[in-house]
Length: 135
Image (cartoon, rainbow, N blue to C red):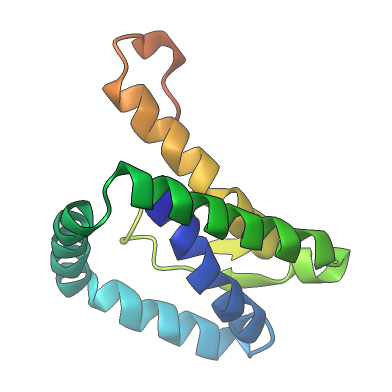
């Protein structure tokens, strides 16, 4: 869950920048990212394994508090037009990435991602979460 929130911190400036660029540039960047799915998967897997060795529960809890506090401060300052700004995403990277996501969608991403993985680990499959529908 911590890393989902960290990803959001990294995505916010990208959405702000790419949300202002022409659609052709935005889609071209997304195509490039989708083309790099295999290297992304390798780095993502290695990062998860390495991160688990570095972040123990105490460190992870402290980091989660810092990151969520920073996100809360940023979200409070967002305007409606800023939250509506959108960017195209590499849908091959994550089942929760829609083809185009608004800044508001990005803020909601880690909660949906966590709910999905929580349901995967739960014996109660009746309440399983689903990835965001693609647009």
